[in-house]
Length: 68
Image (cartoon, rainbow, N blue to C red):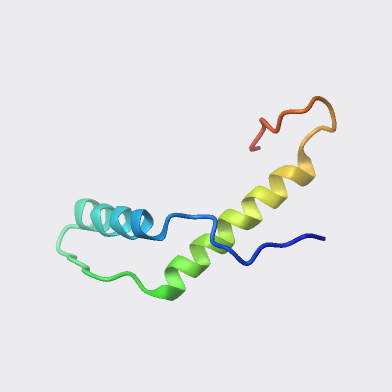
């Protein structure tokens, strides 16, 4: 099974989004850092989501189009 050690996510943009979302949605909490573990876990979840979607995808056509 082929695997890639490279990140699938834009780490800087994910950090910015997480910090902005936390500040906007969690009144009274003003975080200013995102841990490496959080970003690594997020990247792993994206990888697993893609792998799961591919396993469930119908084997017709040439386009990957269903995420569910």
